[in-house]
Image 1 (cartoon, one colour):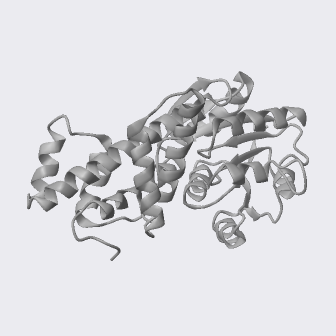
Image 2: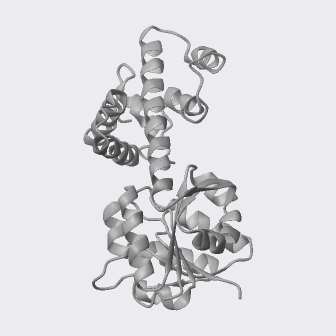
Length: 295
């Protein structure tokens, strides 16, 4: 029997994933968001019910994909009290895509199994455009049974699908991906900022970077935006600060000191405190280029 699919959390990523699955012929039956107008608008667009409770989401779908913001939001939708995805959850499959602390995923899997459901983490190392086009890089973790059930759906969303291992492990890998990406972003902003202060042609400098050891994926995605102050948000500075914090917590648990990650987290925290947290992570350049500030 074909799965019915619901989305919980329909911001830019969740909404585009829902649109993609609808385009691929999936039966997307329900959408839900803590900010109800988002769900109403998307539901009208794709022909899905804008559910007004999490319990109703479970009534309408066999597979529920969550794309929420942080640890607190994940705990809330899987609460053991009040309205929750744990209500009426027997037989459901939860595919959870948030970048959160690995322990959250371990705990949610245990809660899901307790009520006769399955849970799979599906961490995304891509952005909004890839969500709409179905070219996400997805890393999953959980039981083999949960992965096998989710695989046909996730293949419609991804260009690369990798099962990492037991619950929590994909979240660990995602935390490291974002930690290194954030370090690269902060470093690029400093390099281009210093180049600007020296009066160098930044287009030339980016070209030189691209042909030398200074090259990186971040140079491709963020370099021109840093130069032109185009910080349209694909991955916000606030999220970068949060994700750097997740990685640092993991390091502290293992007794490791990561000075570059700590310095980077400090920079992104400063970005938030100075009012730039809603900008794309490329907006960290506003802290390093001479004479800059909010437009």
